[in-house]
Amino acid sequence: MADKKETIMEDLVSLTKRRGFVFPSSEIYGGLGAIYDYGHYGTLLKNNIRDSWWKHMVQYRDDVVGLDSAIFMHPTTWVASGHVDSFDDPQIDCRNCKARMRADHVLEAFDIVADKMPIEFINAELDKLREQGKLKCVNCGSKDITEAKRFSLMVKSNLGSPTDALSEENVVYLRPETCGGIYLEYKNTLDSTRVKLPFGIAQVGKAFRNEIVARQFVFRTREFEQMEMQYFLHPSMMDEKYDMWRDARWQWYLELGIAKEDIRWYKHEKLAHYASQAYDIEYNFRSLGGFKEVEGIHARGDWDLSQHSKHSGKILDYVDEKTKEKFIPHIMETSVGLGRLFLMFLDKAFTVEDLGEGKTRTVLKLPKVLAPIKVAVFPLLKNKPELVAKAREVHDMLRKQYMCEFDDNGNVGKRYRRQDEIGTPYCVTIDFDTLEKGTVTVRDRDTMEQTSVSVEELSVFLEKNL
Ligand code: ATP
Image 1 (tube, rainbow, N blue to C red):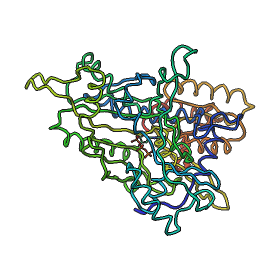
Image 2: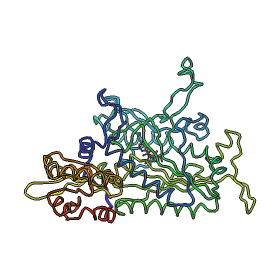
Image 3: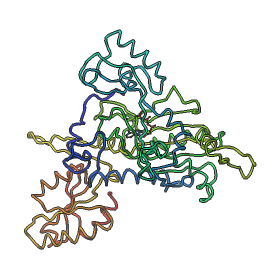
Image 4: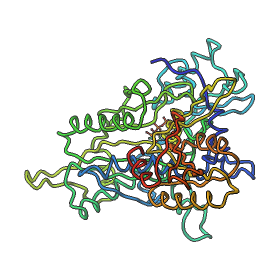
């Protein structure tokens, strides 16, 4: 399928700010590049995406357990993993406007695959474009562009006594990915949770990267959340389990309403020396003008545990009870950014419908399971105490089971518009029929159809439909 050219980014940024999903961080001080805060509805949506992932990865399975490891880790962790030496991206600068660009992304626009390529290769390709007059600043169009240089993505800090602050000895890193904690807790998990190979450890948490360019809203931020699962296995099982996880992850997207035409596999041709297979799932973002990576599924061999065993001097072998074979487990991982999924679901859900007579409505057609608010409850009129009291009663009943919202502002039409824009599947209006006949009006977000349901049956109705 062709990349989508239409862009809805401006609309999404504006809607998410106006309706309390996402705010630029530290806005009153002028903001901080590529850092965002999630407001009430954004937090709820993000939590629902995270919970769905956790259910599929941990709760519904026998072979995966959870972890919540610290952000700060012993600094040798990142020496062992290779991050301190080589977790970097190729950077180029415009000498005219000082804009910074990722050289591999600039080359990608010319269909040159430069991801993880050596800097010499990147500079040779940039030189060719320069000679052809094609290398231009993405910001101002100037052709005065520097050579590529390596730019470390590691975010450094210091821990320890304040007098020693900033000394190199006290350096710690804010983890650039969450899986480091999983590798280091592999042995404790094995010894404490009765798991046996093959098994996985899943965790959700913050990660930090000093990204060179980050102008794509929450797609690429310098502080973000990752949801990662490392699956430990005997190397003979790698192909089978790798296929199983590829399939499981693909299905998760389909179950949450992503069309199969809008996702595709990207196969990495250039692999790290220890890796045997690497695929990404890409989604066709309307807001970013085409397919972009959302998730990586990578077979990493025994590199991670071997490196940590070597650098720590600790034995991280696994002994198979039956065969008595002793070996370092191999690992395959699934790794996805929560902010990227958040943008993907908004990108998919954002809809502007033509209602005729020059009228439109904006609606977030989120899957019900992800919707921040499941039910909104309104009294038809704000100034009728009996309607307000009954609406409060219904709201109090439903909120025990669902994230609900009570709204008596403005007229019902205005309240519907607001709930449509935050993606609430059902609005329940308490009117005079409620007082007389015990029925409420339930309005469906997607069809806008209104159904009369008795108060007693409301819970059953919602349970069936949500
Ligand atoms: P990219 O090529 O886009 O920089 P990557 O290949 O470096 O990403 P990984 O290191 O494989 O990404 O990270 C796994 C997942 O974490 C990515 O698929 C993405 O969903 C998420 N992720 C990585 N970097 C960021 C970021 N800066 N902001 C938000 N999510 C991110």
